[in-house]
Length: 305
Image (cartoon, rainbow, N blue to C red; front, top):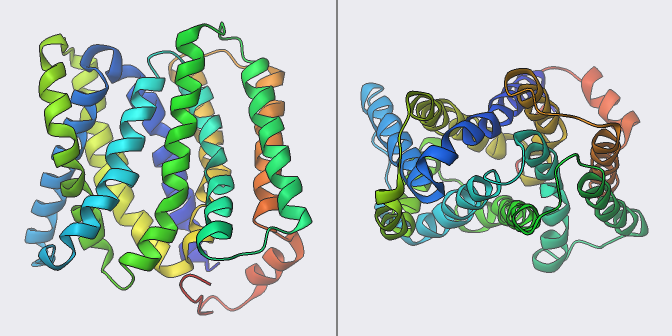
């Protein structure tokens, strides 16, 4: 991975790690559906205005069917599930559980792309399951019905995220990243309008919730997805999901620093198990990574390699 791509990866991890903090602040006041609908609508407006200011006119019409699907699996569904989950679990635990995304990606790659599940990858998947069990079992959060449903919702969100790279590579290959970033937000809106309007009477907006919503929409959505789709085009779906190696660290840190959320050694051990499983599943080799870092800075990385 080139240094420029690595820098984008780290910035993206820090930004997306902060999204769990902002969701945790906003969702009790706004509710999951209104929060997510407002998030994608504001992000779409910001992206559109930014593109117009730069003289860009993204072509959305030829891809409207694919963008509706992308809007569902990479925005409407996971954003809503994560927001609903954070009504019951901490931002730190949500960020840690999101590290399971590459495990789903490996499973879908085996199913849809015919990638072989080697013994190492199977061991990684089993280690990931153990890591999730440790995270949940040793978390200081009381295991109520709401908590368990929140954890399942979070895992459902990571399942959706795990399919995104493969779907984008197949259905939207070659589409410019600004078009994908804007089209995803617009594609998510039809899925969210009705439930958001139905939930609107229960919204109790506060200053903190509105500011958190704006941070989510502008920084964690509009800017972040421009970075993500650029990274996806540059290094491919498998390498781009490695953002989840670093994101839980930032998400955990933001939750502990700003929300004073409790952390236990058991939670950190579970996170280590999950990250170790991601390394095994993606067959990461330290020697190969070091060799790439020593390679010339202008080395070309083939997309979807």
